[in-house]
Length: 610
Image (cartoon, rainbow, N blue to C red):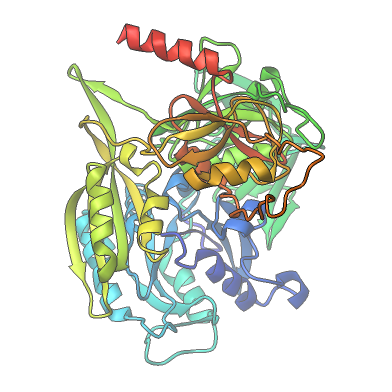
């Protein structure tokens, strides 16, 4: 039977198309909240990094009442690197609000998330958002979205999707873009009318898929999912059906349903409800919570494989654990933290390497792993991270590597630099178009290797005007070499504090990464050499002082500001023999082998082996 008192919907879209802002407007339109509860923008972006980066990283559940109908809303990330968050939560929904920007139209991630939604049979509702933009073209965008549905093989019933025009920021939705309204009610009406209620089996034994995990110091792990059949209440005996086939008996301590921006306890939850259960014995994403007398497992969540890996290891620099440094420094701490991350981050993989203190961590992209590293840094961990590497597969005796579809929007006058940079990294033009506004849109098929470090180069070449997106395309036979970093680096030969006198001598042939007073050590990278070789330098050398002064012999030291690299820029900058040293207070670049003698011996043995 279908429950008509409830609607479960996921909001899916490309990054920056306004999902979280639209949720803000739906919350305000429901009339259930005091004004003080809805202060600021992007109310659901509660994570510090989400607010700083302006993107959604973690999927979130909320619920609001509209008339007699409860609408459970799942806000999902829009960035391709966090696709795993989307894939695992779609099973909780029966419908999907597909948001499309009224100017940009469907973008790479729109295609990805829509394909996933169609695969699990969700009823799509297309929302053409931001129609109050001066350059909006809502009808054209609607046609492009229809074409995208056709390309993805949607059937006739799905192609007859309901659609509406809206502005999340202005807080209105309308069926006619030429007649703006003043409320979001038309969208809420469409959700209730066109999205079906959950199909349930209330008389069958309990079945619930764990699709999300959170942790509380007071109650331990909290498992969230949608009840497919049966019902659950506090004190009920259940079993958790694991991936290895084991059934773990346990007792549900507390049952909570989502209400407004949080959760509230309930005496009983029925099939179709999205609930959070506490008291379960080590639940994991993909497990089925079932009736102990007749347990039946649900199909486990399938998530696309990772494409990028990095080596995580302990921090071995001379500055490890110093004043203001981290609290967690050992491989035991690092291992425990990575294993804990695996419980909720379904797109992540962790393997222990031969060296006891090294781990191979694999994810969807550099940003996916950078968010994890930044989270660990803020929690007080110190670690060193190696260069991102693509994950290859062997097919019929030949190596295959991941390829991505890269889309670049750029002023036509800057197009030449983009074509040169992407072409040098083995990118092939798939499609190109120019608009009357002076912008060009180019799509490339490029090896994932070629994407590492390309964002910074493209932004520099186009003076920051390029808009860059990419999505995973598939595995193809490996191509030739992709150019490495063209410049060598300057490596410190001693430990101490950098001084202006020494930096002034070095800055003529380098871009410096450190400024006067910054602490350096032997093997730390202090600048980028203007040539292609690495150079060992002494940034702590001070001026020799004498008791004689000559008129005009003192130089007036004028230093350029140092180039400070962010975490993502650092990860994309380093080469195979370098690490990014990450601490709560600083991000530094260093050589893996700190002493110059060790580096020379390694290069000699490497050359001999070659």
